[in-house]
Length: 136
Ligand code: THU
Image 1: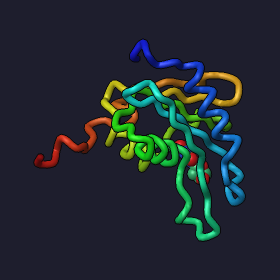
Image 2 (image 1 turned 120 degrees about the vertical axis):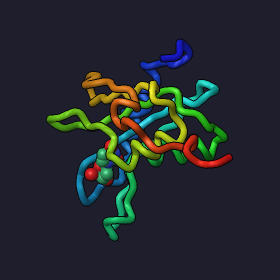
Image 3 (image 1 turned 90 degrees about the vertical axis):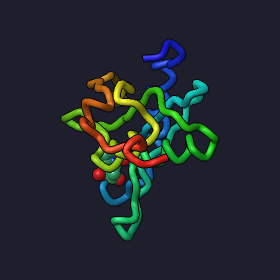
Image 4 (image 1 turned 90 degrees about the horizontal axis):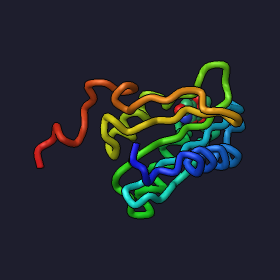
């Protein structure tokens, strides 16, 4: 992980974003935060919808915040959820992260109190399809 990544701040941002989750249907609040190429942290929460499939994940919110702020690379990710098993990004969000992150990008999986697990994006999404597959 890049020395410029402040893991404490990244995890705090994911935890704080989780507090804002709109999850009245699943009651499963998730927060996520990403560090961009300029060291800025962008965070987001899951946003559910009464038309269930229209909801989206915390990681997607965090990426949208990053892109909206001009960020284009993800150097590190934190996801905060509370469950018996560590709350790792869903398959779709792994692919969304892949758009902006390298295989060695760390993904910190945390809950309210502790770091539950850590992975690289390449571990979570091996042999991934990415921008490099497409012609310039
Ligand atoms: N969710 C996330 O926001 N991120 C994940 O990594 C896993 C799942 C959300 C989607 C939905 O609002 C709720 O958690 C239950 O699946």
